[in-house]
Image: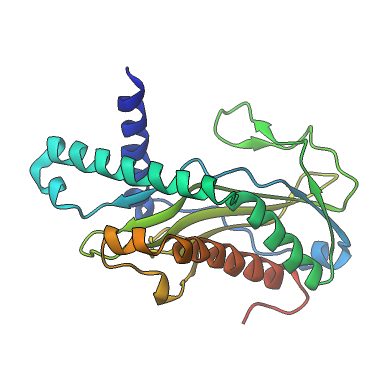
Length: 246
């Protein structure tokens, strides 16, 4: 399999996963108030880069021509995503590091001491599907793990507008026992119907009626991704704080 076909397959896989989002349920553990009430220090595991930062048109006209048309559209989407990734790189902008900063700031404002852990990650559990935190050791009361498979811009079915789209998992564990204290999945921007997820709507100014308009507004579009990270960070801090989320 050549590299261009592999890359194209990744785009198809991500987009298909987004479309199938409504068919699955996300893990959901409400904040354990007994645990959060005792917490003072949280160790945030440095947030990994999303697996994909797509700029994809799911409702593209080429898709109406079956598999061949879908592959044509996938190639177009891949090119758009690569161009946006290069633009982010040229601006020396790191979406994941910005997310680290947003989460740290929000939790500190909620009264927690936060340390960023850059040298530890959970390993894949024996079942090959879940995460195993048994070898993560931190000087904190809890471990906060945040990750996203896809975080970018999507033009969804029945729309020509590109808008922020992300699915982000947020998991808080007791640092000693590794028991879940909080586990939620956040959907931002395009409203994917994932059961038990928390939906956060982004500002309409980050919706672009065509790919050309998106390309003309890339600086603003980056702000849209940062706003999505801010919304998630604020909501998590509210969930974990003493005051329930409104």
